[in-house]
Image 1 (cartoon, one colour):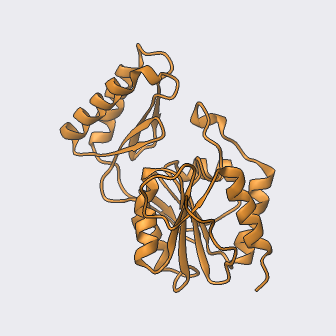
Image 2 (spheres, rainbow, N blue to C red):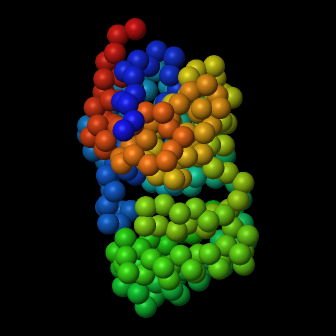
Amino acid sequence: MLPAPPVRGDHMALFLDMDGVLAPLAPTPGEVGPVARRTAALKALDLRLGGRVAIISGRTIAEIDRISDHALTAASGVHGLERRRHDGETERKPADDGVAYALEAFEAFAAHRPGMIVEDKGVSAGLHYRGAPDQARAAEALADRLQIETGLTLQPGHMVLELKTPGATKGTALTAFMREAPFKDALPVMVGDDVTDEDGFEAAKALGGYGVLVGPVRPTAARYGLDDVDAVLTWLEALAEAQT
C-alpha cells in the first residue's frame, strides 16, 4: 500500500490526469462531464499555486476544457501531442499519415461489433472496447498489426487501444511545462491512474518530484497513492486550503 501524498503545496507544480483521476471512468468518453466540486477545486488550487496546475490527459484539449469547465489554462492532450501553455499559446504536432489508415481499419473492425467505439483525435485513433469486453483479444491483435504496418505508437489504456503519432508522451509534456513560467523551478507532482501515466511519474521523479498513483496498487514509479477520484478531490481541496 502506498502512503497518502503530503498536504503541502507551497512550491508544487501539479499535473493531473483526467479519467480515473479527476473524473470517474464511464462506459463511453462522452458520458463524462463537468462537476461543480471538481471545477471549484481546480480553480481554487490554481489560484493557490500561482497558476502551477495543468491537466495532462489522453483526451484532446477541447475535451479537457469541456469536462473541467475551462477551470485551467495549462493543459496537454492526446498524451502530449498537443499542449497549451500557461500563456494560452497552443502547440500541436502534425498527424502522422498512418492515423487515417488506422482510423479506417478501426471503423471497419467496429462496424460489425456492437459496443465498440472509434475515436478520432486528429493525431491519433482510439478503439474503445469497454462496451464489448469479449472483443479485447481481437482488438489487441488488430492494434498490434496496425502498429507494425504504420509505425504509430500503440498506447493501451483502460479498455482502450490508441494508435498515436509518435514523438510525445505525458512525460515529455510535463518536462516541457517545467521549462516554462510559472512551473519552472517548482516541485513537479504527477497524479495518474494507469500505465499511460508512468511516463509522467518518471519525468516528475527525474526533476526531483514524485508521482501519485490513483486506484489499486501495482508496480509503479509513483511514490504515493490515493484510493479513487473522491480521494483525489479531497486532497486537492486540502492543498488549496493549506496554510503557508
